Image (cartoon, rainbow, N blue to C red; front, side, top):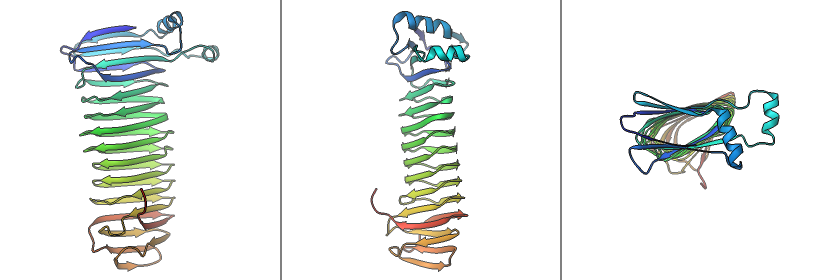
Length: 303
């Protein structure tokens, strides 16, 4: 498959190809869209038959271009065929960077890179990887990995389940995340964070900007030097925080047990379940609460 279109007055590209590997990337020509299909590891005849079975087609309606396909695996007999025959269709989609795009791949994989328009990616039972985006990004999916990295001036809204989540090197980017049974790491984020993780651990490293993070049924670990108000809450798990020994903050720490390293210059009140006061003279609010778990604030060492 190799189809080309003039972008012209198009404003949105919509893709819905189940069990496919979709790769979205900028076209060298600003007014052109190109869709190239392949079946890695298959000969020409096998690839042609698979494309025929998936019934991949395109349709333009007003300012929208649609790319459709259907599921191939539909039962036990078809599943047996998949054990010995290539079934993964890959679509390389080249588009103007500023074009809005919505892509869905049930049971597949979606990759997007270096796009500036609004991007909406859905992969139930699959994976998503987004790199170098500079516009709004919405992601939903489950079962595989979610990776978002190296984005600038973006806004990320994500819902993910039953897979690893990794968000890293995001500049001037706001992040809103809801994750279930998904071990999550957020690292090198410059921007606001509103994070909720259920049934897995959350690790935060080197965040710059306001942060609100909650974990239920897992540990929450924070490492860095907060520059704006930070609120952390762990329910049914431990809260581990690591700050530079000379970092100034207004500290509130509560939990079934609480601990603060002596390396910090601290003024305030301490009890068995609560520590509240000024670290190194006081600064932005740093609040950590552990419900039915221990809360610690340690002096940061290493990366």
